[in-house]
Image 1 (tube, one colour):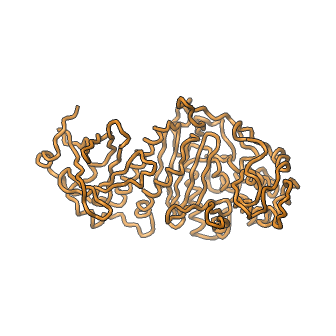
Image 2: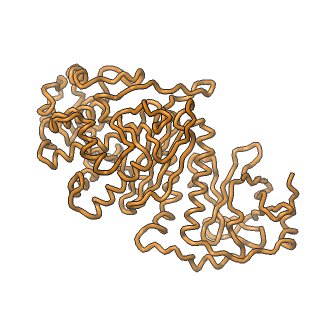
Image 3: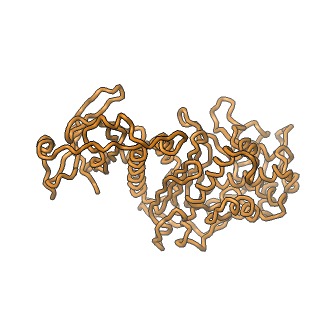
Length: 486
């Protein structure tokens, strides 16, 4: 057991080290280490088999993190090139493919969708004076049902195109286009059929030639590559049962539903995909799409009359989180969940993929964005300055030695201590939204800090303790002791 030196004695026995001012990059790195520690702890608690994350700025993957294995059977570690089922993020690829054909004059946004795929329209008693079109289908306001006539998701027996067309005719048109919003996998499958008809290629071949190959997305496929499980593809797992066990997802292909949910991709490839958005919006011209077409897709085409429904562009979701707007898509399908979100003004993107149905990557993405984005743009954004700020000189201690994971005994009060300008930050590990619980500790003397309230006043002391070798081993706040975990 390590011998502790009381904090007041420490001030006498261990000289305060000279100040080492922290740069913007060092402060960002500290926050990223906190993110890694929290993500690992939370995913371990949820028994997630595998996960991968990435943060993009403009044309660069500036950070990535991997957790777990591609398969509980093979035990191969997840990498940045591991492909995950990205579920409904596939709809972005589908929308881009469709709009490339609009650019080429082979599809018309406002033409009747069934003009491209044959007379497979459901019966319609709505009295609508507007047809189902590519435009309203891409914004999920066509009035068509969400799903096919059968539950394909429970047994992963997805239809081929012929079955898709046959079963579509057995539906009823639910309401007139633009009367209501209803997210629809069926609609996206029908768009895939239209893309195939207009291009005279299979949907997968067209997407590969039009998007994947030009962008160099070498680990992205247009349906599930189960032949690569444990060799570059992460197998999905369903929700835990009452005993905490997860059942692996059966091998399956999405077939006609691939345009809605069938793409598999990796952190590296989705980073390239995000960078394409930033590049085309910045440079203009044409790359896969006209820049004006991409901008049109990402504008809001639908929001509820009371602003109480999700905002949608053409295939792109637009979400407001407080005062911030993010663009992208989420995904939930057999054994997998994905979040792909971009902050266009900052040219940042956040990617997270997991192989578990009961863990929400979107919730992780939102707190990581809140906690990290300003630090990312301070280092990589336009006019970024990596030099230490003048405020850094106000401390009389080397703050880096205090950084680390501190665990509270018997309770889930664990915190990660990191560096924030001339202070320390403490972020709770197991909060649902850790970014909302960040506290700042201002250095007072030696190993003593004080909690800094929002109004700038100082409150209770936070006292760090050292062992007989001078290494920080714990902290005490409100008499609660937290042990540092290496």
